Structure formats: structure tokens, C-alpha cells
Image 1 (cartoon, one colour):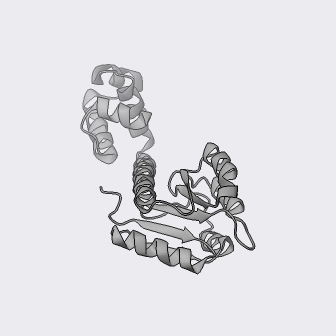
Image 2: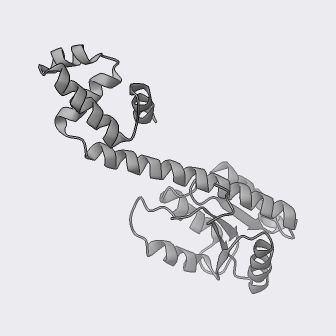
Amino acid sequence: MQPTQDALVFIVDDDAGVREALAWLLRSRRLPSESFTSADAFAAFLNARPEPDWRPSQPGCLLLDVRMPGMSGLALFEQLIARGLLESLPVIFLTGHADVPTAVDAVKRGAFDFCEKPFSDNALVDRVEQALQRSATTLESFKAKQSRQHNLAELTERERDVMRLVVEGLPNKLIADQLDISVRTVEVHRARVFDKMAVKSAVELANLLRD
């Protein structure tokens, strides 16, 4: 998947001129955006999604001004850290010269990058696209994990027993001996496990459970 498809860039800056310029710049590269006038407004947007494991439904990144009236960009950054969102919603700080050391420290704590105002248009959008790619990769991994957990929950207790022994590399005969069931029954359970977990081999199953 290309990171520019089905992606959304959030702009959080109290300067209307900056918000409009960034939105225009992103549109020129076919990147949709949504703007917020303050960190408080974006925090309210997040707080309307109270689920502790909430993730964006599409790749995204956050262009975040460091200094704003009310909640600062750094305070909002702390909220994103607390919610574990930095990988699925990478943060690029927008800074003035005086805020560069602060932005460097934020990068060390997990921010994707920072751009000093006035920034290079092409360099900024290039970094945005890279941040969106990270977001897309993270969300794919998160969705795969959710799918795996759902599939595991569909297994019966006996299917779990068979799966564990299959992953250990035991042949059907030894699995049957350990579980005191027939080889044919093992074959049936094994086939159901493969079907429910959407795999075609024991190696694929082991790799799936290892991730």
C-alpha cells in the first residue's frame, strides 16, 4: 500500500496562515489533511476515543507546533506517548529557532522528526510521506495481531492442544499418543486449526504465533 493512499495528516498550529499553507502544500502532493487550532482541540478529538487500545483507522501523522496558547505541543506529545500512539501516529514538530533543542529532545523520546520554520516545502512533505509509511506499517501489524487474537479465540480447547503439539514439530502419530486420541481425529483437528488460523503449513503456523 502506498502511504499517500487513504492517509490523513493532522495539522495542529494556532497560526491560521501556517495551517492554510501546510494544507495547501499537502494538497499539492495529494495528501488530505485536517487542521486543529490548538493542542487542546486535538486532545479533545483524542479523548472522544477513550478505548485504551484505540488506533487510527487509516495511516496518519501529526504536524505539531511546539508553542501554542493553552496546552503546549509538548504536553500533547506526552498524551500521545501515554496512549502508545507514536508509531501509528508519528509526530513531526514544527519549531522556531529557539525551540530546536526542545524538538531534538522530543525526537530522542520518540517523535518522528522536527522541521524548523521557515521549512523547506519538499523536505517537509518527504518526511510526512515517510511518517505515513511508518504509520501504515504499524497499523498493518496491529490489524494482523487483532486478527490472530480473534482466530485463536475461535479454537476449541482440543484444537489448542493439537496446535501446541503441531508447533512443537510432533508428527500426527505422536500427537495422537500424547492426547490419547486417534490419528484421524488429530488430522481433523489439525485441518481445523489451519483453516481457522488461515495458514497452510506447520511452519507458517509457528511463524504466525511467533510474531
